[in-house]
Length: 105
Picture (cartoon, rainbow, N blue to C red):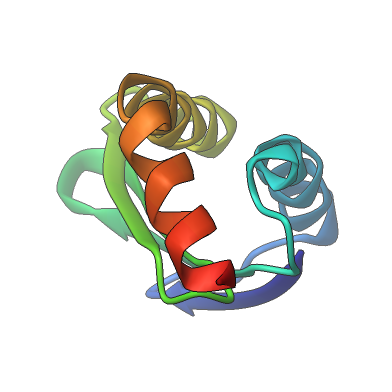
């Protein structure tokens, strides 16, 4: 998976980026070809951490999640975003596999 990171209103250390790569890479198993992951980190009022995650598959499939952690834990927000997308993929797995198969033909 190819990653693009953007930070709004905060400097972000490498350990959080590495954590995000590790967690998001687990979703790679759902994509036959390399997917692109766009991750935006931001901090809003009262130390609220927000993660916006968009994954675009090679066939044009798009998944998006925006999660936040009110306690100020960026890693928790990353976990929530990955879990949300994982659930969406699992819920729609049959329909997605049909679309992927049709695109391959």
